[in-house]
Length: 232
Image (cartoon, rainbow, N blue to C red; front, side, top):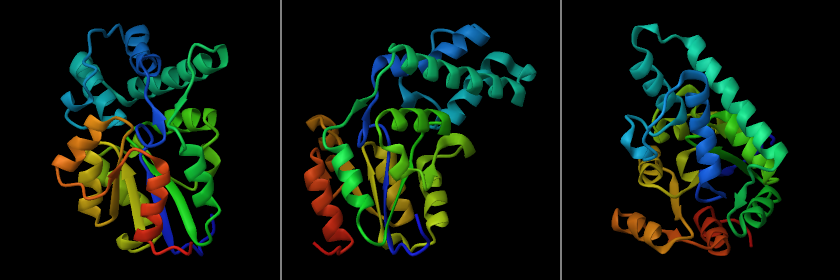
C-alpha cells in the first residue's frame, strides 16, 4: 500500500471475514493446558477484563502463576499457540471458514484507487496472519495490521491503525460484529458498519445504536461506497 491513499476500510477478523469455529477456539486454549496445565477456562470472551488475546493470556497466566509469572511464560504460550495453529492447518485438523463474499469485497476494495485496507482484531498477530493466509485474504489486508499484541481494548487497537494510516477518522470505515467494535468506531470517530451473518447478532448491534448493519457483503460494499463517496 502506498502513502497516496485517501481513505481506508478496516475489518475486524472474526465475524466480518472469518467464522471462528470450535476447533480454532480450542487451539487458543490448548497451549494453556499442555504447557501450563491450566484447564476449565471460560469460553465467554466478555468474561475477561479485556477482550483481547494478549490481555486474556496475561490475565490467565498471572492468576494461575501468581508472583512467578514473567514475560517468558507469555512468550512460551505464543510460541506454542503459533505451532498449534500451523500444525493444525498443515495436518487438516483445522480449516478456516470464510464469511460469504468476504474475498469478493476485499478484492474489490483492494482494486479501488486511493484505498488502504487493514484489520483491527483482538487476535494475536500470529493467529490473524495464519488464518487470513489460509483464507487467501492476508496479502490485501497486511499493510495495516492492528492486532492484540500491544494489548488494549478494541478502540485502542483501532486508534493505532488510524494513527498509522495518517488519515482523518471520517475517511475510515470500520467493520465489526460486536459491541466493542461499535464502541471502537464511536470512540475513534470513524464510519461504522455492523456485520454478522446471524440476524440476532445484527439486532444486538441495532439495539445498541448501530445505524448501518448488514449480513451481506454486497450491501457492505454499497455502504462503503456511499460513506466514502467512492466513484462507482
